[in-house]
Length: 116
Image 1 (cartoon, rainbow, N blue to C red):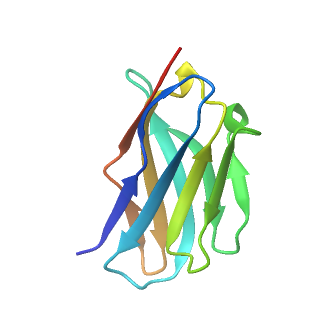
Image 2 (image 1 turned 180 degrees about the vertical axis):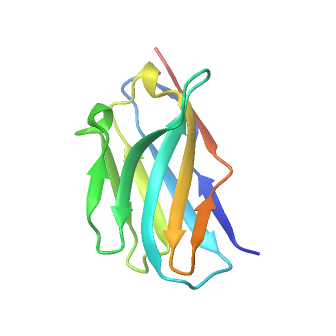
């Protein structure tokens, strides 16, 4: 079974840090792009950051300088390091991965709650 699993969410005080992880299993198709999205209550899902197969990265303006997307040497696990967290970063964070062969995978989401 092909699946994408996120981990690392939690409750943190404003100014703190969390690291999210995203790993796929059940497929060996090449990874074209991996992205983190988030969705706050009552709001649309929005792109936070992405990393493509060549390692190029892209960030939403509202996280630039605070969040970093990276991957391990095997390119299997993708991370989102979140620093200087703000209450407005509170949301469910989703991992999305596009692979060759037409695969478009979504994880189940992980809750991030930032309190002031």
